Length: 258
Image 1 (cartoon, rainbow, N blue to C red):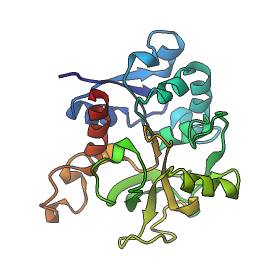
Image 2: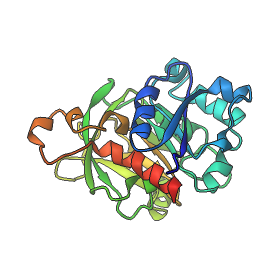
Image 3: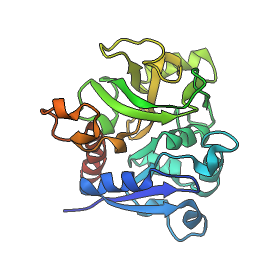
């Protein structure tokens, strides 16, 4: 059976690449950790892979702003990325990877490829590292969420997770295009403020997808919930056989297999 090739893009400061690589290998992918310098030097080429993942961490220490330097490198050295997305190949940005996709103008989707959103410091003024409740947009065509329940839990770990948009009208466009893939909610599924929304993102947005559903950026960390015992309440959740995050990676692999 085909093992889709997964490019796990890393840079100085990336620190979730091993867990993400392991998750894809567990579900039948052939994941390879590739440094951005290898792309720059021509030692690796994006179009030779089936899936692209930008994992979490603190690329370049987030010195300028979270994900900004990596975003600039993506624009310079991954010029094939928009073509990769148009071909329907899965692209996933997790936490810092999501920040980089947004600042590279990949998400939210725009035909011009301009940056129309950004991230700023959490409203709490602190680094938020804990589990959150999330509601998936069942109307979204996001391939990573196929077969998942509407309500899930995942951990977050970020200091600049507040998503902001260029204009109020853009929020209505995101709703219309079904690009809001996931929202922070309370344990009963309601849109509420802190602490349920850990950063203050507009409309509680936790993830964005392109209209076709093959490019996803998300702040929560699915690679940190691939086994049932990763959940802090796992001893009481005997009905859970595997972490919900693992299913997201499996969906990407199965999509590539056709």
